[in-house]
Length: 366
Image 1 (tube, rainbow, N blue to C red):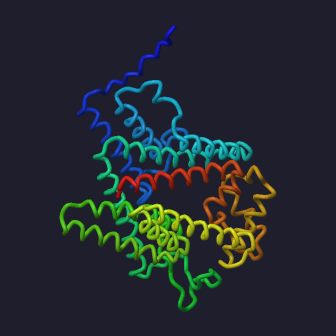
Image 2 (cartoon, rainbow, N blue to C red):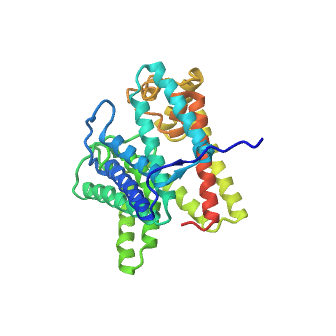
Image 3 (spheres, helix red, strand yellow):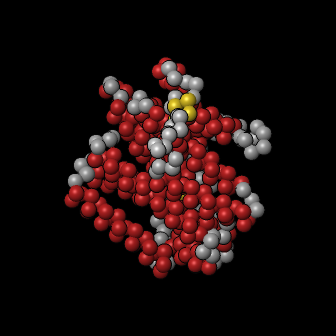
């Protein structure tokens, strides 16, 4: 006997023009998500229950991507990518932490972020034409955030954050010679730095793709403002990440075997040095003390301490009265809040993304 295959699920949109319009809706939803993250353009109040305007936009965008496929067979509906499994494990680890706390607020925030990531990936894969729109979104987002930050510094608008020493030992505002750190449209300078590090490469790609020299000159001006804004944040991690990004670009622009091995060796040394600082508490001032305390907390709580609680439990173990909101390291904070399962999921996501970047570079992708 020959097993019969189940018929594919047919969705109503089949015309090329209709499909393109629906995909454009998904791109418009992604643009709203970027505008919300940059300029807070959507209302914060829930429409009904936990459905906020942002989550409604995400649902519409994801539904538009689903409809634009035209048809889905059983093969398309199954879990195919290791990335999906890693994301599911991350959500599971966070759900266990939320269940133990009895508070699902931060878990819903994580789920919203996952939805935004899948919307961006879906729009990117929907059509080759979508790449131009995505890169322009990156350019516009950098322009909004960077120019706001530059204006703050040029106008002398205090943001409540200062940098007086590289090790963070003299960061009190009001002292002579301290740098007033720019925050742009974000609550603190570290968020602005992370945002710029993430989107500056997209802005560069957009500038490279523009057809006219005058257009490219304006776009590169925006990129330059983004670099200046990154420096004005005074974020050590952000500036180091930008340097690492430039090093990665140098390696991946011609990803030969020798370059990949050399770049991997340097990355391994950097990770090892960071691990030594975390374990020993040497170098980095208060930041290394936070890392060492976070490792102690993680060792005593293999299932995590709960979402959003890392700052409080770390502050209780660090001398002094300084308050912390997190572990000042994404992977380490995930270990503290969701335990070893959450850290493993996040490390898997990191490794998979790095692998995809190397594959794309070998294909010549900008």
